Length: 243
Ligand SMILES: [Zn+2]
Image (cartoon, rainbow, N blue to C red; front, side, top):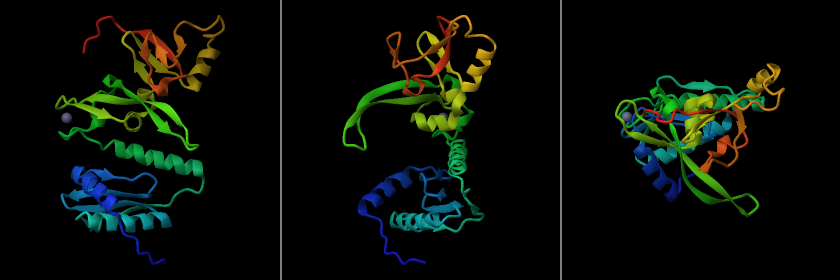
């Protein structure tokens, strides 16, 4: 057991006051790669609900507890704490973490309480925000296109803006890897799907017209970066699509 005199910095406490305060009661806080998850139990308490069976997870829990206490929250003893032993294989570990994140995404809700996952996600819209210069590890910058996904809440009608990565967790590959321009619908094809088309002869007489590969622009419109270079099936949208 190591003795630590770790204390949260004032910046961290400012961040915690803001972040923990904004979270709705019953929502889950699962910091990336920490091995721990918390549920907000009331306006002034949290409980540990998940912990990876890993020394780092215990250290994180100790630090997060100190941070929450510094922000005025108590850490409740959980009724049932789930501990999971991580697999040794890094691939399996990554998959386990991804699955855990996907599971949490299913519990995200609109401010009105309606679960985001219960909306007709096929109607989600991708919106370009702006291009910013992002720092790279070797000290240069690269332009990055920022996008958001807009979901209309089926219960209260409010538009919910999401980070595309979060939307990907919520909606899964099939719904994420498609894009509607103003005239066409593009649906990304997996390697397995393309193999099936190839086996069926779809490419024998030259590329069939239904397939396309998207670049950064299509017919004067910006393409979401996650669709760049992806083989997709394109279909015309009806001219006057009903909302
Ligand atoms: Zn709502």
